[in-house]
Image (cartoon, rainbow, N blue to C red; front, top):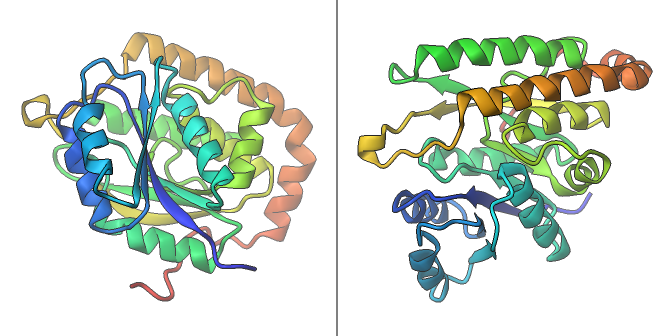
Length: 262
C-alpha cells in the first residue's frame, strides 16, 4: 500500500481568537493544516486568512452559511480527497485537543492505513461531571450499536479517518452533519469494515474566561442525539450479519500501536 498523505482538518464556527492559537499549535506539529470556516460571523477567519498568505501548508476554506460540524468536515474532507490526501486528523478549534499528539496519531495511521484512529480521552480534574456521565451513556449505546466494545469514546472528536470510506458514509446518510457527526460516523464506519484503533490523548476543558467556546445546546442537541441513536438502532438490523462477521474476523484488541513515533 502506498504511503498515506495526511493532513490536520479543523472545522470552526465563531471560535474567536482561540482559532489562530489552535492552528499555530497544530502547524508546529504537522506541516499540512486545513481549516473550514463554517459560516462564522465573528471575524475569526480574517487573521487566519492573513496567516495563510505566508504559510504554505495552511489552507482556509470559508463557507458562507453555518451547516454544523459534520457539514464542515464533509466540505473539508471532500476538498482534501480531491487534492490527493488520503487521511485527515480531525481537531477541534477551541483548544481542547492535544496538538502534541498529532504525530503519534499520524504514525498509527501509517502503520494501519485502513483503520480509523480514535482518540481515547484522558480527562483532567477540570472535566465537568455531567459531561463525563453523558459520555458513559454514549459508550454504552455505541457498544450496543456495534455489538460490543471497540469504540472507546464515540464522542471524542480528536480522531483520524481514512477519507475515502468517510466520504462514502456521508453519501449514504442524511445524518452526521451536526453534533451527531462523531458518534454516527464511528458506528457507520465500523459497519463498513473500517476497524477502530483507540489511542490515548489528553483532553482539557477551556473555560469561557480563558477563551473557551461551546455551541452545544443541551436541549436541542441532545434531542438530535436521541434521534440519531434511534436511527442507528433501526438500521442495525440490516447490518447485523456483517457486524457479526467482522467481530469474528477481528481480534479483540482495538488499541493502536505506535511502532515508529517521530
